[in-house]
Structures are given as C-alpha cells and as structure tokens.
Image (cartoon, rainbow, N blue to C red; front, side):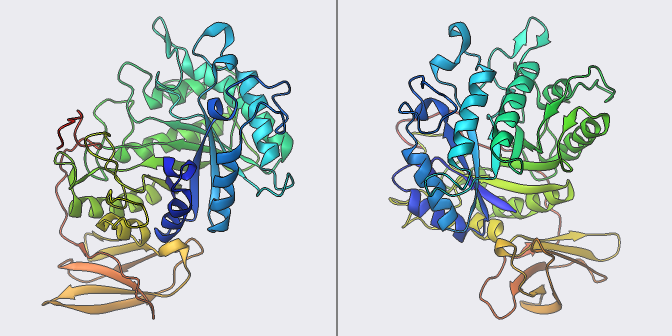
Length: 438
C-alpha cells in the first residue's frame, strides 16, 4: 500500500491535494493532526470532542476529502499545546495526550456527527529528535524512549477504548540520531532490549504498527554511516529489532506487528542543483519500493506532493514540480515511478522483474524487455491481492524492462538492467537557503 504525506491536506489546496494523491496511485494518506492548533486553549473535558475549546474544522475537512477520494486516512497526532506540558517543560503530558487522542478517536469513530471513520492512529512524529520530543537525554542515559513508551500506552488505551479495532502506529522515527537518540538505540530502549536483543526490563508497550522514516544519503541499498542509524539499506536490521520485541513479549498487540514507512523521499535536480538528478531519482524511487517490500514494509508514504520554492524551503521532493497551483503542477518522472514501480534485478542466471500496479489493481500486467530499439513481450502476469507482481526470466540481463497494464495506457518508466553505482547525495539537496535563488 502506498500513501502521501503533505501539509497541503490541511490548507486551501486540500481538494486538489487529495485528488493528486489518488492520481499518484496511493490508497492512503497521512494527515498530521496538530494538537496545539486544534486545542490552543485547555478544554473543560479534554476527552469530549464537542468541548467548545476544540477547533476541528481543517481536520474534519481533510478526513472527509480523503475518504471521498477513496483514500484511507492515517491521523498522526503531534505537537502538544503549552497547557499540556507539565510544569512548563517541553515534554508532553502522556495523560493529556491520551485524553486528546480519545476525543479525536471518538470524533472520527464513524458514528459521530456524520464524520467518516479513521482506523489508523499514529502517536507523534520522530520522537527520537529533540525538535519533536525533549529532553532526549538525562545525562548519558536516553530519556525519550521511556517517556515515549508512556505516551504510546496512554494513546493506545484511549483510541482502543473508542473502538478495539483501531490500530496504533508507534515510532515514526527519524533516520539519524546525531546528538539525539539514534533510531535503533531508541527502539531497543523502548522495547527493553539490549544491543544483542536480550530483554533488559519487563515494561510493555502497546502498538500494532512500527513506523520509520528512512531518508537516505544515497541509493536504495545505501547504509547509514552511524551503526544505530537507519536508512533504506538498514531496514532489515530495524525489522530484526521489531521481531525481537514481539518475541520477548514487550510489544502488546492483538495481531502480528506490521512495519511501515510513514515518510521518505529524495529532492530532485531540477530544481535543487545539489539534489539527485531527476531521472536517477525516478529509478531510485521504483527500486526503493522494491527494497522496502523485501524488508516486509507493507505501507510506504512519500513526502511530498509539490516542490516548495527553493529560496524558501529545503523541500523539493514533490511528485510534481512547484508550479503556480497544484492543479497546474506538472508531474515528475518520480510520479510514474511511484504510481507504477517496476524494476529489473540481475541474478546469477537471468533477472527478476518486480512491480506493483497502480492502486494495487488486479489488472493483468504485460512485462517487456527492450531489444534493438524495440520492445519484446516476455510475459503476461496477474498481480496478487496487493497489486504486486514478480517473475524470473532465464534470459540475458541486457537492455531495460518495463510493464504495462493490459488494454490500458498505464506504462512504467523503463528500468535499465545494468546496475547503477551508488552515489552520495543529501536527501534534501541544498542544506542552506539563498534568498537570491538557487
């Protein structure tokens, strides 16, 4: 399953944003529900969604538009208002967090005021970074994992008290720790695991899905430089820690724990001259989806829809260029690579073709290989229930492969069978803003 995350879901361009998300082949959308915006003042009854202190307007509209466009809404609650931080500290009050989560889950329970149902609930964003959760350390000991465990448990109890079949997403961890807590260290401490994945405590944490943001300073197989950081190439190690937490019983869930990526991207050149060349980025997008699928990631969310101005923002990772309006924005090659990814992976004998049909469609897929300026049909395959198809061919791994939906115009970008060497790029391209332009 694919998704998109973008601030436009809560703005004036919301209608176009959801339509564009659907056109990108996504079946879900991650909507950031900003607690401090919904509740700038302390409510009398924080668990009651009808309390007069709450301001739900933008979020109600976003949830409605998501569902109207056939998208599964994922609500991510972030940013505690000042009144919900104990003793004036920057640390969110877990009890207040749970009460607000209950109000939100009640409002979007499917039986409140004609509003649609929200099933997926994410607790916070990048809790291993001090810009989102502080303090990260108390002396030389990580503080944030234990505090976040309490936050998640209050959150899970609240949203499941409304509907037991609500699903809780924990983590959403940033890939690099730096002076904060690296994601694997954060995860091990949260799950009471030592560096060799043995139990260190008896605390439990209640969630159903673990999420991560594997931004990468290189291609889809690139590893992060620090041992406890997690880029795309390190997702199997994060999966190993997650499975260890489930095995020791530190994770409490009514179902097998899922592994999601709720944010990732690369900026492109153009418009960012320090970012990944636009055609290489499209190849990386398709292969990244394959590598994440191999790591048992079952949902991937792209950040973002449209490039922001390069002299105002670091984010030029849109599936569309930054034209005047979102409706007029032109798609990048990455749009097709994200919508209908297809890759060719050379093997010792022959090559593997893997792909995913747009929106997980069950339509038959025609696989082709280039030859002498033309294209040769190799096979017609039927995707599985998730739209995934794969087939091995005992042929020379030359030229390129592509796929097309049978009887429909949808076609993938050609994927060269010759491996491309890894190249180093900051995932956000330029690291400074120049008011005068690029």
